[in-house]
Length: 111
Picture 1: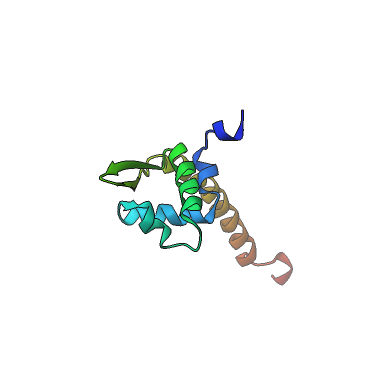
Picture 2: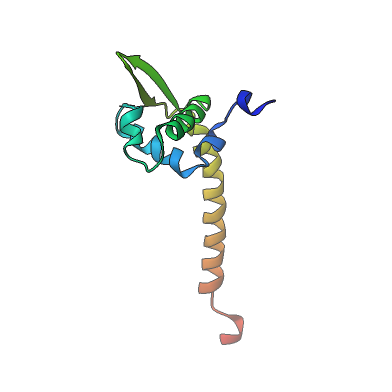
């Protein structure tokens, strides 16, 4: 599969900090690319590439309004990410609880 035909998934899409920040901006409101670009120190072309990847992952969509294209967030695919992270959150909570128990448990030699 060539790189131009690559289909991005949610995990690839959020791997980049700029794309995560774009998602945060679009969570607040729908925006044209010019307004999104104004929040970054990169070119409009770079933001367009990030938006393309986010679109491929179905996290954002664009619609034409007059002469501009406005982008909006579609958070539904983030549910997959939430499920994946929930497993590891539970895993670490269990490990930390076990560690707390070991640390707070009176040492047998101290009795």
